[in-house]
Length: 333
Image (cartoon, one colour):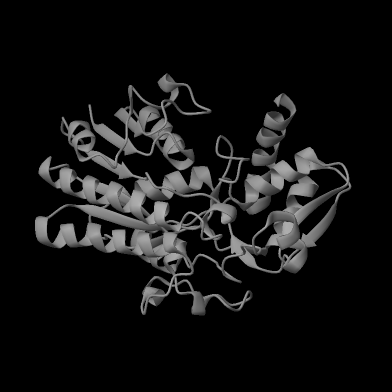
């Protein structure tokens, strides 16, 4: 039986990925700092769930106590705009994720694992290439000269180089992908760690009159449904001709106001969008409105060329599934 190790498998993408691998017949070990997945039962996603701190080298060494055919590294200190872009969590984001990746790449090499996937982020792309909301440039080759808009992006870029350096010097077979705003059910939907699609769905589910959207709502993004992200990740991992880094995301770019309207349409409610920024935002929250770059959209040409696959689900389909699940969570609370 093939074996897989999913680091960060107690999180959103990791949980869905582990579940798919187990359904394919792999023996799966999930490792996470959380003592369980918040939304999946253990037997749904893995044969073994191990809770521990991947910043601890002794713990990481113990995790690699057997041969693994596939290792997926998704563990990171991260969250939505309210977590990443305020500046309050910069040191923790860089320190925690940096230690995790340094430990993992070292002990994966020592254990001679067969191949490793590292989940990077679209946040590595230069801020100056994403100032025009209608024409952002997120082609893989545009990553340098480097100028990410957050410390989260800088740490991700460093770790890309870390994994690829271990490939060159120690023959660690690694694949690197830059995720673009993955969303879907069974992930964070409140408490500041949720991404924009989940936040919009929650706000709509809780409201009967209006919802608040940070900024003018004209900033643009693309969002990829979780099942397609898992498909793309596994396809990249299991081919032998291309290492990356490569984008994994959707090319269906929308404004944040449009995303909010899609959530409203999914609900069937008559809700108004209230944009908030500037001094009004500071008065309410105590810090400047965290927006990120003005425009970001996945460029999928390289993935299509190298892997021969592209996503097919549109944003509305994914949002309908996600809204239904988040609405259930809100009603239960």
